[in-house]
Length: 251
Length: 251
DNA sequence: AAGTGGTCTAGACCACGAT
DNA sequence: TCGTGGTCTAGACCACTTA
Image (cartoon, rainbow over all chains, first blue to last red; front, top):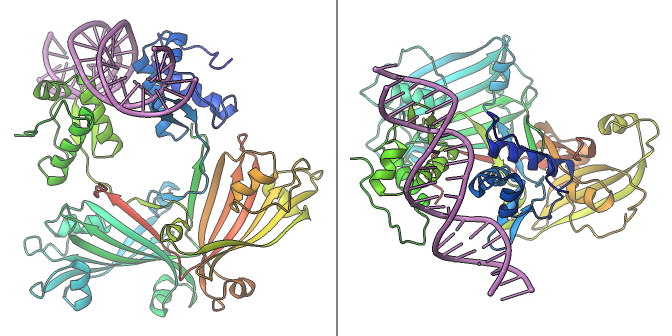
């Protein structure tokens, strides 16, 4: 019999959450197999003597977890785990290092105002009248080992010319917030593999022609106007991306 | 005045969705700025003459979109876009190619039963008594250009020895489902950069020492027991990963 | 026509934060 | 103490699928 366990209505744990966990366990254990249907919402509400809205809340959690799918007029069914997605989730390439408690720092190699050129005008979608950009070069290192090198550009705002400020937030969105009036709203990143240039090899202290990650980033404001652009090189022997798919436990 | 627009209660579009879109627009336009508070749920329900539960449904959508956050006893506030996440989402490395309508195919180079060795026993966490594994080598190509090369292993089940079957689903989870009794439930993938080997360069038809993506994948069953393992090489000059962060429009 | 999930209501009580 | 969001109820009507 499906759903034999009980629910404690007087518990501080919400009923919908208890029910969610209960069904989740049945699916994980294989008592409910992919393609099989759950009891109807009405049946579940009678079975546990709870409101149908509470049942729906629990099922909504299962749906958003990708474990079941609902079809109007037909029923609710256990989904098949999708394992062919490649969703590389790394809450910041460097966050892992920070979490390990290692010593790390971002070093500012250079910061200056530069003249616009055709490439920058094209990337920032500005006309001939736009003359200047801010230019930064930074290196990120941990335990005195250089790990990545990044070149960043932002559009230049006269009103906030505080170029010599501390690099409290050396990220591209941080630089934009600190040095321009623009508000970063969205970002696009493209990751590729490459062979590092000679200059990059020297800066990072790696062998010439080493493989590296190359991440180009564009930051947009609320009107989808580009307000920042950067190109970063990450040591291929120190970085990797990990992806977990399917119904792994995350308790 | 915030939330001047109207809601059409007789529309086929759900009220909660209309309200969600309405608030979302106000945030995107900057009428509601990060850190500012939304009207209380009670106020919104009075303002539009709708139930508080319907208001909560709309706000729940905003929360899951990461645009607002709620604090019990305090209120609901507009969030600050988080742009320093790196979430490379590519629903299958090859899906893009398929969607473009190009000709593509997966070619089976080799499929055989092999003896266990120490490395395989270690990867699959099995003892000395486990003697055999299935072994596959495949190449993925589009428009007659070879794009990736993959070596796959699964544990061997006597009951399903259909080795000569068609490769309808050449993915690792697909091979496991077709040739073993195990049910793929979760997957772990690790992406790294590397320089291709000579053999890989020949197979993919690229220059020696080219940079490539290297993806190692492990598939687990419901007991988190490894049931499949693969190592794939993707041409660095043909693949890239893209990530979109923040409050970009997706209408 | 019957049964399913999708939406919505008008209340209720609670835990929590601010005052 | 008061106002906030969090949970829950017992209904209602609807759109959709299936028989």
